[in-house]
Length: 355
Ligand code: CP
Image 1 (tube, rainbow, N blue to C red):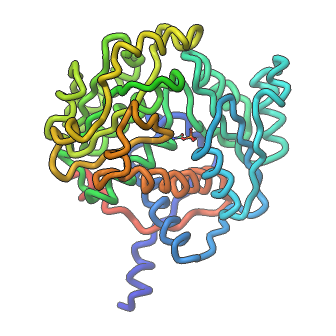
Image 2 (image 1 turned 90 degrees about the vertical axis):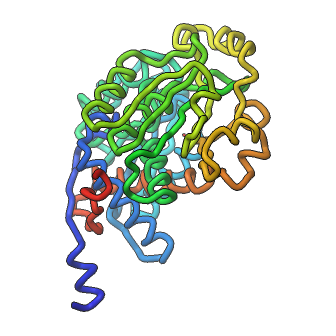
């Protein structure tokens, strides 16, 4: 069998046209595997300059209620590489700022284009509900670019990065998801919540640590426990960063706000945090993890507060590879949910990965 035909025999087709991507919970394990496989395939094509115009002449509307560097630019560059175009929209210049309903916004944007992506992440109880209401009325897929509950584009990139660094079979990998101090702003809870829900489904044991005031939404904690039980992985909560880091293979220390106060009074959330300035990822603390442990962070990082320069710029850090994978994963999400045609990709050895 020629190399070409052997590779072709590995090709599998997938079509998820019209499916929303609001939380990873609504995508089956097999569907997430397909997303990862398409992401890897698109990364190879991008690196080898192989054209992959799966979305010619398509338009995606990017609605931002919050700031962004990685998400905005990965979606804009990604849709261009797929042959389409993005409209960058901020809520303050849209009629939503005058109270236009998510129903009307969803229907109208659907009539003009092929996908809607939304970031609405700062106020607990609002963002996820808003995008679900848009999705209820939109005739095109709605993609979550970060809400109050989940950041499914980030967590998919994180899982892709862990597989690249540690192999496809992640069973037994210990990942520490820890709160860390940051004075810059009360950050959304969606990254830690998304990680604790997704990672246990893919063989990973997760340890969560946070000060008492920085608890996560109960429904995400329940999903994490349920997923860990279903997939025979571990999900545990410990009191301190040191306990989470001990013998970890991967550490993800990052800040998030107080669920009770960040929506209405973010300053209070930041004030409470000042008593936990010692929750920083420095070289001494990283030594508690395994000698070859990975340091990950979705970025932006508060250097000198969440993490020292020595760690984030040091040999354990994979933050730039992690951020790069935001491009390939968001392209996979757009391609699979928006393309008219099926997307070819090499089949992931899913059984091996999940054994
Ligand atoms: N990690 C992440 O979502 O980055 P941005 O806020 O810059 O989009």
